Length: 138
Image (tube, rainbow, N blue to C red; front, side, top):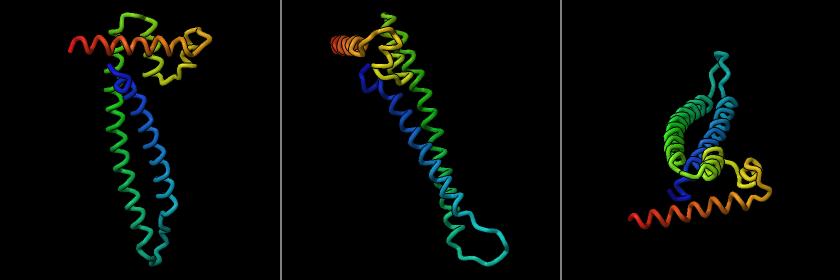
């Protein structure tokens, strides 16, 4: 599995976070243009904006639902792959990095290392060896 494939879950999570920020902005904008219902005639602009925002919010929520489902599938795939790794320390590094989204500095601290370079080197060596063995199979 390549670094790009391993990073897919992280990227999906960032994408979902961006969708939620956009949803928050849309909902705030929709709330700010709610028409006053006092029975008096008004211009059509406010209700058109409300319906446009409602439609955008609905579409974005559907997109979020699809992305969350994709995220669950990707996480499951990644967890299964990590469980196939024989070295328990590498499994821990991969899990902390790609499932929990920790930096190498946080991983080093979590594993009791003083330098972030230790888990980074182990991670990079593992990926290099995996890439070499995958090429040999092809």
